[in-house]
Image (cartoon, rainbow, N blue to C red; front, side):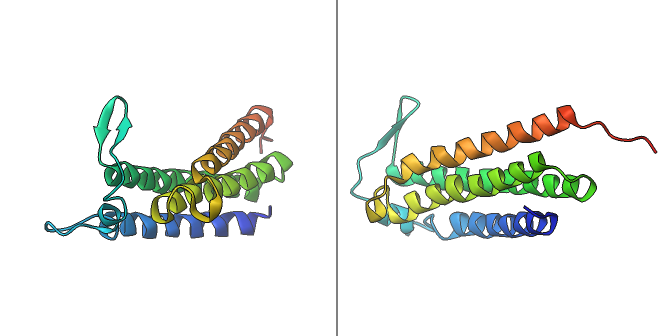
Length: 157
């Protein structure tokens, strides 16, 4: 991935994270005793058990959406940091880390957004099984960045 692409994607992913965070806070939740999108969509869905506690499905899915937003923002910042490093050093490890972060954002956060808004089996895809693939890419991105940092020997000027 080029430095320009890396930094541009980081900025666009960051923008989308803020946009989706606002949508989640204001568009998915209910207000003033009016049910929101998630409360209407999951009204007939049985409660979900999380950490041994039952909670309404709409609340659980709102938490999933917020997790997607949070991970998207953190990995947008990681992608930005990799882009800044790429301005100083040409490295296949950095380029690979950038691709992993970008793919991880799209698959992890994207799967959570689709799961919450469209449903867990939209288009016949089990979206809850797509998210771990994205999470694995994010982990791989961090490992590639760590390997780069361990191997990098800056020149003293």
